[in-house]
Image (cartoon, rainbow, N blue to C red):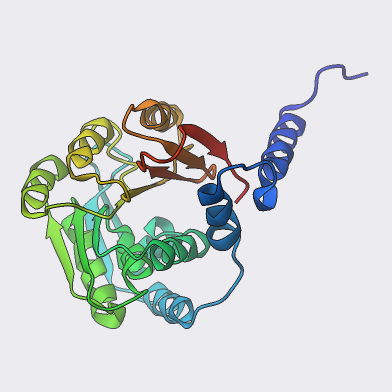
Length: 263
């Protein structure tokens, strides 16, 4: 007779708990967070822009041109794959992209900064809710930047300022140019040693309504530790842990609280 639950059983129990906690806003006393959960995170409404972006994804998946690039996970070794294979592996998931669109459509940011282009598809999700906004994207892999430019030519609603190079060198330049930034999207999982520094640098442009979104906050131990340090930062008021993504707010009118929400 097995007395100790199996690993799979424990994982299912954790997921069940996460699914029940704050489901549909239950137990959330903050009107701000309640509206965010019910009107944005759990919203099921469809938008025509999402269909357009997913059509571009499908087109990119059929691109057979081969690309040689430095593999991010193999310490500088060269990899060679087709554009379609890279897009399938590296681009943001449709579910996560749809959430980015709903977040920007809800908060209406006018200045967006993205670190890590994610093959350009995440940028389309971030910047397609309206025209007239400013979106700057930093990408450290030149070949990935080329793929992103193809995506932008196909479907960008606004001009995208794409800059290629080392994040630690590019970020100070763009921050000097901006008086403030309304939304930051961190898609820099492979920059584990830089994430703390990049986050601290971005804090210089935070205002009361700034939103930070982090992709892959539970990807590995180092990223999980980084996410915990973000939650503990004294400038941060509210965080929402969606397991696969994290959302951070700096509104001083909100009580400091960390939420875990099923997504």
